[in-house]
Image (cartoon, rainbow, N blue to C red; front, side):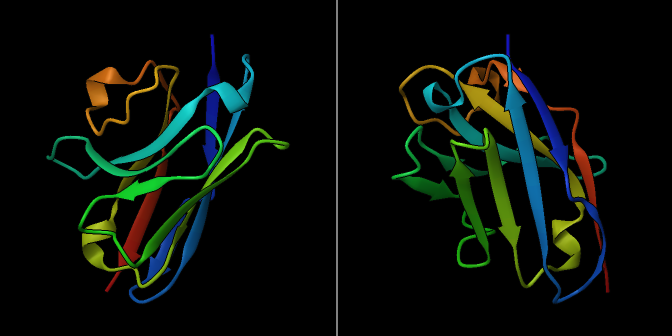
Length: 124
């Protein structure tokens, strides 16, 4: 089993920045591909960003490309999401997810482990 705990959410003004963290435990972190998803009120949970086990390859949703950066520190068992130039459409609960299989995917149903989420609210 893998436990994921997100932190770093909060209230920020439009144009501002936040960095989310997700701490993992219960399994060797470097064996997991990691991703961030988000869910806005009344909407489906959507893919945000993905990073491979080594951190050597990343992939982003078009809506965040150029503004968000996913990274990881395998020594600290932590994945990060640096969010810049935030706008009101980024308001959502952000979830960390982990996947042990090799295939890169944006499909939320294929992620085995999830955190509890952290709220990000962007005020305009």
